[in-house]
Image (cartoon, rainbow, N blue to C red; front, side, top):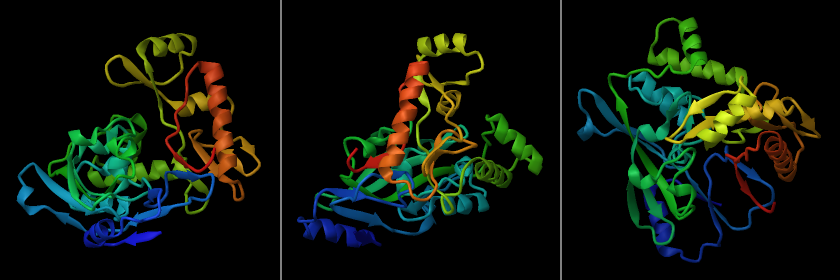
Length: 318
């Protein structure tokens, strides 16, 4: 495991040491990974810090803020909210580090981080060369990016640049979020952040206390025809807008309808408040968590004809 604290260290590593044991795995906090076996290779742990305003890109409407890949994500959100910069507040309390945000295209409560990212600075793990990816080059998708596909583990993210609003317009499209904000008082950046934190702490288990990787599955994207057919059969089923010709289904609802919420098999289980979250009660192996996820996928497919896609990356033999 190689701990990388500066860009210079990373460049030197990739320039001078071409015999790094393969395969390589770039690992931040590990909050979205399930190990089913020991990883036999080299783990690259980017821990580059620092948050700053890019002074030359400041105007009356927006500001560009950059952060090192090793910055804890929620620390960055708190930093921006404290300064009145809008754009990241709906993404409060998501575990992980800044470097993972463009890889995963994290999102919550109607906001995806791709809406704020303007560029990503990364180093080639082949030769240490610096590459700047603009927003379109990141090929962002739903919980997806070029860094999860053809460039997986080929580039080490070192710094991410976000364009934020100095005159923020709040996104309160989720009724539950709007309701929580209203309970706190005025519609402000600070109250949106606190509302998101309150909701997440109420619905999701704390990974510091009980093993979990947050949402284990992505919400399901299906064609409009499939969504309409299911909606006729299940009128209460939540359906959300997606890109043209497609709808998004709440996978947590589908899992719940199959009777999995709160169910436990040994030390592997489904969270009692949010069926998207699989939890480890203490001694479940990674393989046992994986096997539980496969049982869930099978039952949802049999009942609804929908193939659940894991959001969590599985490392090891399955």
